[in-house]
Length: 143
Image (cartoon, rainbow, N blue to C red; front, top):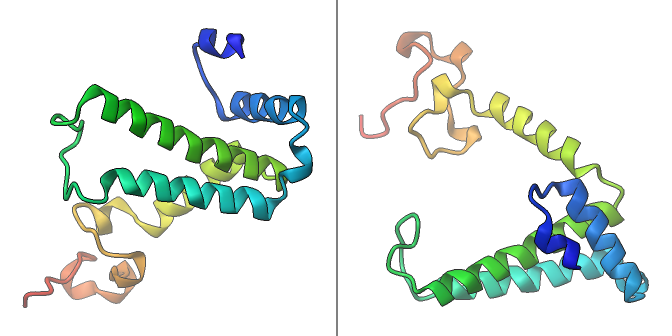
């Protein structure tokens, strides 16, 4: 694991390989079924959620957080990511391709000209074809 400390550019493929070796070295592959990995990841998401549980809204960059709190947050975020990468690997998903494909699909689902500045779900966004009178823009819900 010493080589990880020296790794400058971390990629999903490198994480996948490191996690596979980490698991193999410990003979944990026998426990890494998709279901088990998913449940473990959900537990880690719970631990991540716990960090924010009573803080209310927090500004970007977490300016009021102590360094130890940020380090703990980084550890829990890492746990979630590592389980997610391992789950994708065990399921035979090429995560690099899947992520890029999903970004492309989201770009089509949320085109800039219809979504900029809106938090509405894609099912609530008015399609360009259906709204000639307002030029493809979102309707103002207050009117």
